[in-house]
Length: 96
Image 1: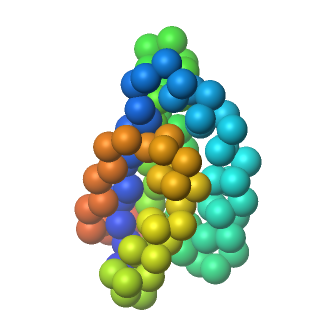
Image 2: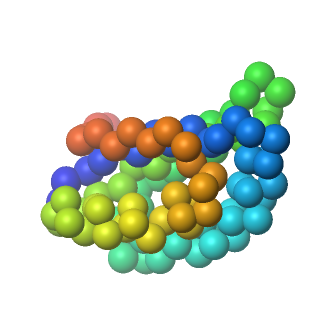
């Protein structure tokens, strides 16, 4: 499976924190599904200096880029307009 590093920054408008809070339960449901299927490796929130969530990172793996794109097309943080800037890069987890 190809591994990917997903880095996504939240919107910066006044409603952005509320969108994250509203969509977060659905995002976690989807992440748990990815974990159960072996596609989720690790992830978490990116914090600002005050400890507030301003983005996310995930390391995921998929058999094909089509599977990756299918997940992105249904990711609640994308559909709910939480993530504004998204970067997806090929990645390899170190075997240590």
